[in-house]
Image 1 (cartoon, one colour):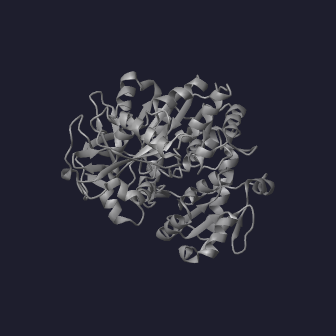
Image 2 (cartoon, helix red, strand yellow):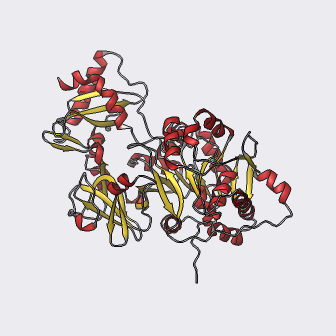
Length: 550
């Protein structure tokens, strides 16, 4: 008997189990699970009516909200592939991603349709254009939720879900481009189902929780798991610039118990709460990802959310979640090792996921037999095995070959991260493989070196880069000072550098770092506002090449 693996089946199940329960809240509007399911059926039928079918790529350029979630599930039901590109990556990157993906349709806001008139060459593959709620010249109009229920309040509407195999593509999700050009990651229906199962098992997500996803895509998991959610009224591409009152008021109004957001968002919100003596007792699970989370941030969160458990999943768009670290596991010993430059602890592999440390190679590793496994304690390249590993990058066979390893019928993902396992089975992250600095004395790892400089009270964060040739690079540490501490006078600069050198001199691996530059604010990724664009800093630092090499 055929088994249905289309991820949209889970929305049907949520609608059957929690029919009249509110599924999504956004800007004082709400929709029940049954209504969300019906709205997605309508979108699926409309797409099919205009010739979209199984395998069709549909570029989605809608703002977060009820219609966004319903449209994505409608695309799933039609068997088509939503192409999800974060517009915050910039116009040039966005247009390149569209051109590479060659979608057949576009569902977008008026601004998205306006962009295609300005840059038509990137949209050459598109045959059908749709707008939602507001008409736009040359597009087919899809009703928004309000108009749909006005017209279909008493009418039956149901779409048969396209049958899909476990390995059938479900979506193309683009990386942020924080470590190179953005790449389209191919998700299958099976991977989405496995991710949902793991999120439920590991993080206790489900109908008994109330979610506030700061990443709009995670509202899809909420709907599929029967977990009510409120989408915060914020720009998801600028979490570090969020108005704390928006998040605080949302949490209090809806008694939010579960939330996944950037550490940059939580730092801003919790600092505001601490300053204004605000507590958020409804929170039970707080997830953070995208960049290392300091023990201090775990403590700060618990000081304003006393009933919460802090959790940090480790993974990437290509394989998530792979490992998990909780605030409760952050012992004094682990915190001290992190402080002393031994890396950043990302926890232990989660259920059914295997993680390996292999000898780093710059070339393809086609088969598992080509791999050299490294023992406990030795630093190497991190590789993930499990049902959450995505099979390929869309239309990028060369990059796929460099990132994937075959192990029988399984595909493993090379994370591009460097790390090691300790004797207790904890995985430690030391930085990106491409961010290593090769000096004449050996390899320096960014996370390890930066943790030493970050201990200075006037340092917000730091970034290690290498200037020069191959194995003879000059290590340079770039400092982003706390507000008000950027040195404006030469005497201030010399004093700041002298204090930083004292910190560096306490450790052998940082003692050779003699060149220090100041830059504010650091360029960061669009999704989390936390990953540092070291490549951009390196280009900027070349202006000071004479100082660095003297």
